[in-house]
Image (cartoon, rainbow, N blue to C red; front, top):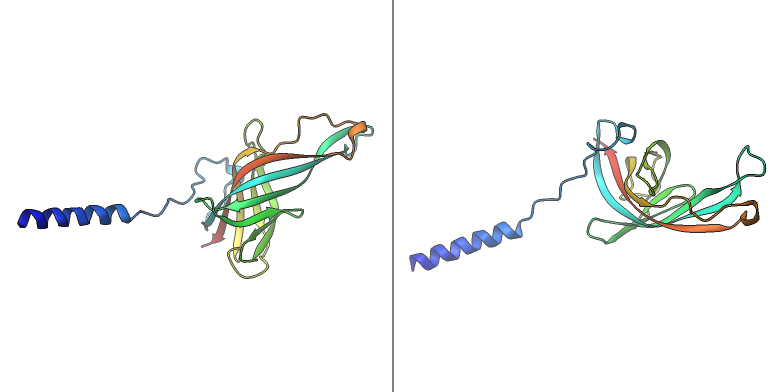
Length: 180
């Protein structure tokens, strides 16, 4: 009887230990270039994965008569939580992060850093005050990290193709911060 009780107690403890999962560690910016690190005094409140597309348009190159280049037009992406559930969207211009609860935030780019060959750069954005009450209320900074894809098309942009648009796929983590 004692052995059965001891085994039952051990099994219960094992199940309890397996059932209680520690919270996932929050994002660490330790490995990021200094230019895109959020200043001290802010904490991560939301981690998302942006999955979508960026539109580019072939336009005249600024201050270079007769030359053309691919120009960033805007993003259109779903914001997913770490479990893959959609929690918002990212679109623009202007660059806007909107939570499913309707709260949204825009911001101004403070800095960028290389994201690796074929990837859009890492980015640090200072958030403007949010509109609506919800997940975006109080957001102070947004980081774009872990970028994949999203660079201007490889297709030629010439005076003959001026005005054409190209869409490229991309993926990126967007990390949202609030002041502590």
